[in-house]
Image (cartoon, each protein chain N blue to C red):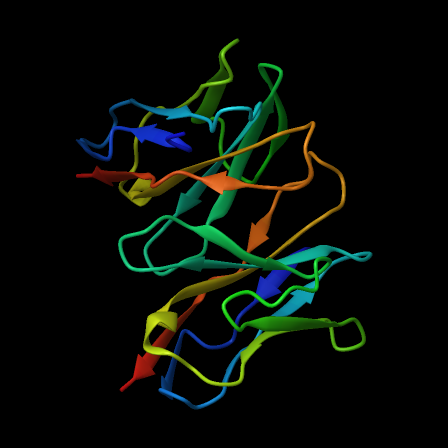
Amino acid sequence: AQRVTQPEKLLSVFKGAPVELKCNYSYSGSPELFWYVQYSRQRLQLLLRHISRESIKGFTADLNKGETSFHLKKPFAQEEDSAMYYCALSGWNRDDKIIFGKGTRLHILP
Amino acid sequence: DAGVTQSPTHLIKTRGQQVTLRCSPKSGHDTVSWYQQALGQGPQFIFQYYEEEERQRGNFPDRFSGHQFPNYSSELNVNALLLGDSALYLCASSSERQSYGYTFGSGTRLTVV
């Protein structure tokens, strides 16, 4: 079964502290993996894709195929990082649907 | 470019009624996907339209149907509304001809009473 699991509904982190949002997935094969973010009163938007290996807004995510994980990390949290974060996966065909996790609310404490 | 636009933004319907939600994709995009996001949940895939045909469908009953028009805009129809259909409905557009990129609309908040 194709599934994305985000074990934490809420994560509170002090400003300047490291952030790690956990994501585990289940998929037969090698999926394409993403992190989406939704800031307050804004629409859902793509944060990063695992194949691009980019660092966006200081966030990185490493794919661990052995542990089927794709955790999102940032070394120093900023207040503007407070948002809902969704881990998601898809197949590699253009018509493959994106499957989302339930999301983790990241709250940066001052 | 206005990106993906959805209408209406909010809607209140009575149980048993029917509803139509609308989506205009981002300029240059030809594929539209619909998602349902219940409170506290991640978006759940409903279906995807390309070339005016439904080509992928999630685990939703036949009460959920859709349509795509020649200008790539799309409608989501829900018949015989249930209280459990209350959710945020998101539309996402993408392009077959470009590298990956889903652009989401702001959604339509449907409340069934």
